[in-house]
Length: 207
Image (cartoon, rainbow, N blue to C red; front, side, top):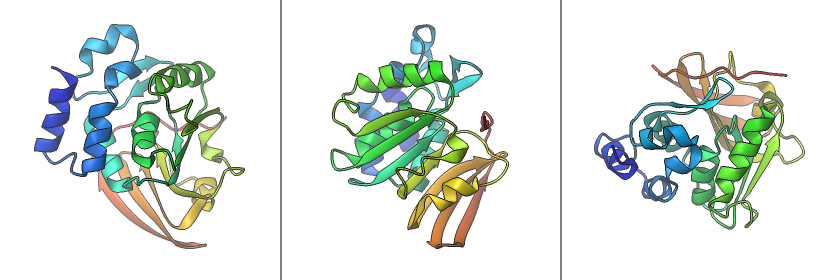
């Protein structure tokens, strides 16, 4: 199936609702973010291997998480477990030239793969995306606080460092076990959490 047909299907079933996110999905072709042998599979709503036991996530899941996160122009967002760089590019499109996306990936080879993929869209040259090789559990304290945080690998619980690096009023969307959680920071030590069960992810590994 063609990737753009898949995007239309996601809109039809209510997975994609927000105009900005619909544009982001249409403009950032998933085929540019997977290994050569899987490019023909990018129109199917399934996760695809990118090596090292990691995947380019299922498009419906990515859409669901981004709809919860609601990235907006001008925001500073951290993308943890950036992998192929697809979510980083989707976020970069949403935050635009006035925003920043800090993508964190712990596997050096995937860091390079993500950089190469994101650079196809000029986001790195424009200074919108910075890809950092490191432990996503620790976040990036030197760049904090963040308006929003997206985590694309399953943690056992909300990593404390990431909660600390979120602005008051900020949102984090992350998988914990087999659920997606929306965490909203109400004050320095108070968080509101909502659970959306029924998903599967690769684990978030700490060095």
